[in-house]
Image (cartoon, rainbow, N blue to C red; front, side, top):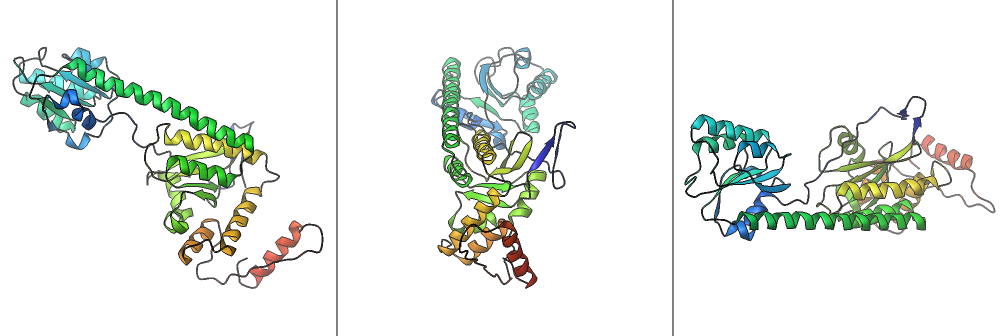
Length: 361
């Protein structure tokens, strides 16, 4: 059953207890401190990391020269600072204050060129950066700061342009799928192909409707799906990215991207575009049970077509879809009609009869 939004109250009325959706954001495509230190204009100056090795993979939003604490305050966080120490104070207390100012500015790191103004790294500053766990590196040879900033900024801008192009491509892909009236399972498969990792469409009860990009059988990805999904919705974790599938005040489920590599367009953006296509597809469906029927049809087709590598894969797929079959007898019911279509009431009676006999149907 989909969630419904109450316009008067301005809230969504859900068929179960409210669940907080946590979106996990994977690392950005910005260069890391480690990558900057390996760039040619920096590498030729023989960089040496003194502190913060555990934070070398932090992203660098920008690079600029900052010889004073005042210059550092102008940043907005994530900058890698270059300095020669020419404007730094000489006494220990002032150096510690400088270090705290830089740390409070949320810099990505500090690179000091050793030379006449500062032949060695000040111990007080090193200690402050070490205590904060931030990268502090020194250059043992003269560096061309202009070349460093140009190299880093060129890469950042190039990746931003690539991200914009990727977003356009993703938008075009899922818009085309919507216009073609592609079914939910195909949209999910395309999302998984784009991300290069498993993607799962679940309903509001955390039952799997469709999945793409799974390993053979899907046993590992779908085992204990409902419990794992509920835990991820509440607290995040496992590198999952979760976006709602909703439109016109109704929520039908969520699209879940399992852990994978970053995408130039952003994993969240890819899933959001796919979720829009799924919502449009859902709006065109005949009734509320369309997703469930298609999911069941796909499961039966896979079972009858022997498209499972092992029994564990069968169990995982069926239980993730809301059919608890582990350790249970399963009875299949087929009704052949002479004419017309099967009324819903007849199907319901057949299922009830199977349940009364102690089996799942």
